[in-house]
Structures are given as structure tokens and as C-alpha cells.
Image (cartoon, rainbow, N blue to C red; front, side, top):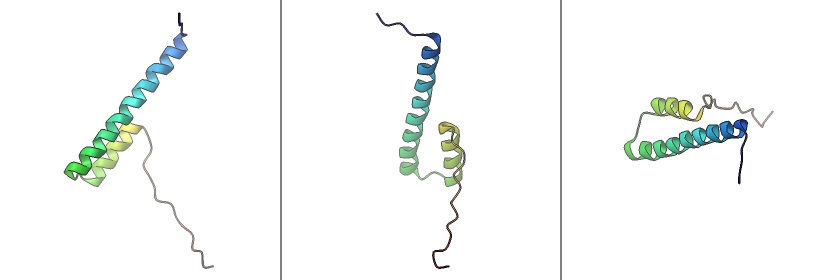
Length: 65
């Protein structure tokens, strides 16, 4: 018989919720490709679904002095 603590059950539930959001984000990517969604709206949706902050481009330093 398996038994879990309340903390483990909460962790499982949280992981399942994150997995659901990531699956929806993957599906949304496929839909965006299919329908050509607006880039700004798409980025906002991705940020909300994955919980990640906005992506900022990195500043590259020149390699020639």
C-alpha cells in the first residue's frame, strides 16, 4: 500500500498544474504557427502560461577590441 504525506500530494498537484500549462503552451505554439498570431500577443500568452518572465535579448560585446 502506498501512502503519501500532505506535502507530497500538494507537490504532485502543483507539478500536474505546471505540466498542464506547458502542454497548453505547446499546443498554442502549434496553433500560432498554423494561424500566424500577432507576436506581441503570443509572447504575453506564453509568459502567462509558463510563469516565465519576458525574454530580453542579450547584449553582445564586440570581439574586435
